[in-house]
Image (cartoon, rainbow, N blue to C red; front, side, top):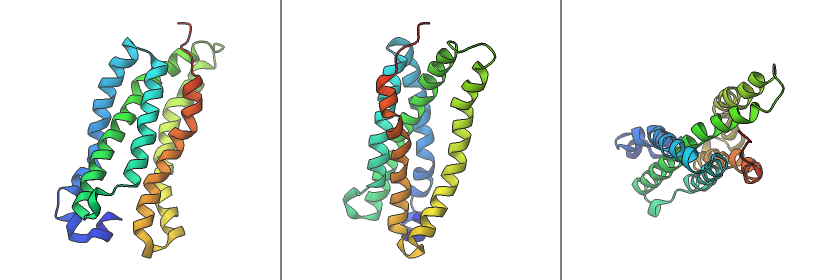
Length: 176
């Protein structure tokens, strides 16, 4: 969408590669930081902090302004996506370990099913949904409203972590 809207301003700048790949760099930083944090502080608190980071920077990414210039928008979007990546990275070490510890309290024979459902299946379902959402949003808004469509697509990224916020607040450390 950005390529269509901003044409050469987007394609001739570093923004095209930065915007699409910077979240992965943030994810690696988040995995390292939150892996350490969850081991030395608290898994439940690390998950809560990463969820708050996801909510804040998904919303800021959707509202990227950057002074109103295309290069400013690209710079703001790149920065917010990097910080969003840190929140995404925080979900991996804290979430997987917390899930593994919590499934240890379930009846034998059912643990693996719920662990896989809560981790791998959720990630894979997210990949499918993230491919369908932009298509549906563009169909709903029309191709003449791509400025709104790309912001709506990014703004919808606030909903999954926002839906988990209450659960993360109430999450207690397992007995183990």
